[in-house]
Structures are given as structure tokens and as C-alpha cells.
Length: 210
Ligand code: ADP
Ligand code: C5P
Ligand code: MG
Image 1 (cartoon, rainbow, N blue to C red):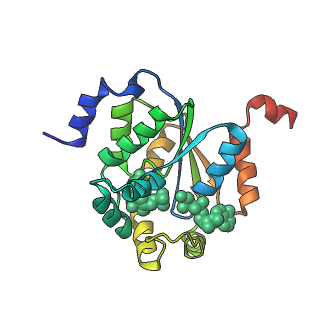
Image 2: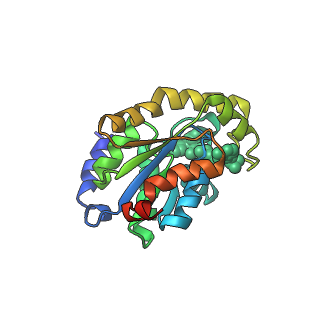
């Protein structure tokens, strides 16, 4: 019937990822909680490749793709782009990049994202890193981010917070029920947050030596 799940089922047997599955960590948290900042640190110290779903969608707009206008409209409104689009971009990046471990930042953003990704790729995350931060602090950070983003204005920020509470928290709860969530207090300064992140990523042997 043309739903994302039908498409996913069809693709299930053809996806390159169904043969060789990389290790995936989902990095989740509200807008401005510091996902991108900490992913850069994790890449440097632990050899992961960072894939930000938001960055991939913004690159797709810039590339002049036929979906560009739709994506631009969704981002301007803080809405979640249909899974089919985002998953294709993630799959393409994973297949093209020669690494076996990826941080997927800002995805899955809702139940549809989560279920479709699992169905299409067959990948189950090793764990989920959840950056927990108050809306007051996230709002302060977003309003001073200064990256020229169309969605870093107070109206869109409020819409993004609403979407996070109404759609994204359910994904974190889902993984929490499976014992996969590692929650970090993300309201602290960058260095302190990274100390907590390191404790999660460092191999057990390093922890003993430290
Ligand atoms: P996200 O990817 O979760 O939206 P970013 O990593 O882009 O968040 O961070 C949002 C803004 O907040 C950026 O300007 C960043 O420099 C800043 N920032 C990130 N982490 C912290 C922190 N722990 N304390 C203060 N500012 C931070
Ligand atoms: O994660 P980031 O803040 O960069 O995401 C920016 C926007 O990109 C989101 O508010 C949303 O409109 C879109 N997005 C999406 N689906 C995702 C990730 C991001 O639609 N999984
Ligand atoms: Mg980000």
C-alpha cells in the first residue's frame, strides 16, 4: 500500500546493511542538549564516525535534491521529516563510509523513525546515549548558537521542544524499557559532560587503569 513499512519490507532483503551490520550508538536528547558537541569529542577519542540526521537533511537541501523544499519546510516548522527520506540518507552514509562504528545523532526522533530503521537495516543499537537537559538551558544555548540555522529562533525552538516531548521522549522510553539507555546530565559544562561520556565509552580495561 506504499507505506514506509511496505517500502522497508521490500528493501529488507536488498539493503547493503542487511549483510554487514556496523555497530551503532544512537545519541539522543532535546534540541541544544549538546549532542553534536559531544559527538565531535567521541569521534576524536573513540574512532566512531558521527552522522547527524539534521546535518544530513540540511546537506540534502543544499544539494538541490527534489525533496529539498519539503525538508526545508519541515525543519523551519520543527517537524519530523518522513522516515523514508532520513533513513535513505543514513543508509547511504553508512554504506559509503569505511568504518564499522557509527554515532547516529538526532535519530530516531519518533516511533516511526525507530521502527522503520530497525526494519530496513536490521540494526539494533548497542546502546542509546541520552543527554538530559532542562528546556531553559537548551533555549539559552540555541539562542546563542549562531550557526545561521533557520530553526534557531524562539518560535521554532518552542515547537521543537513540543515535538521532543510529544514524539521523541517515547523513543527514549522504549529503549529504557530494554535497558539500553545511558543517561547523562547534559546541563553541566562541556568538559564535565565529556568526562561522563568517556566513562561510558572507555573500555573496561581503561577504566581499571584510570
Ligand atoms: P545539539 O546538537 O544537541 O542540538 P549542540 O552540540 O549543537 O547541540 O550545542 C548547542 C549549543 O550549545 C552550541 O552553541 C554549543 O556550543 C553549546 N553547548 C554544547 N554543550 C554545552 C554545554 N555542556 N554547556 C554550554 N554550552 C554548550
Ligand atoms: O538534530 P537537529 O537539531 O540538527 O535537527 C534539526 C531538524 O531536522 C529537526 O528539528 C527536524 O525538523 C529535522 N530532523 C528530522 N528527523 C530527524 C532529525 C532531524 O526531521 N531524525
Ligand atoms: Mg546537533
